[in-house]
Length: 119
Image: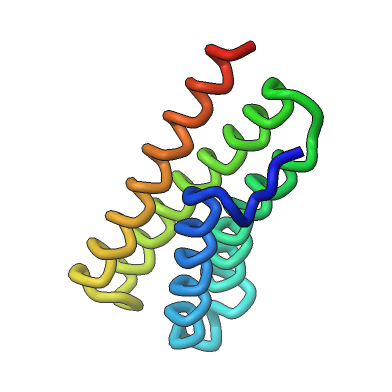
């Protein structure tokens, strides 16, 4: 069984969640059950699925949860773009967060490929 806390990709995705929570705390109140909620759920899904995958048996199951995390990362990337378009975050800050997301997505993709090659 793997320890998710030892994975660099989990650590980076966890830090991303913290950034998303801080950022969405400043969103308009009318977005509380809309964009704020969706961004928080999608971002927290990334490290959550990595952690859950670590508790599963075998590379195949772990890879499946990493793929879900990868999909959630893409969702967060779009939702941040939407937040920028709506004027909730500025483009510079969006670029910073998007760079973090792209790094996490690359790490997840490489991890998935390695796991699939090992099966």
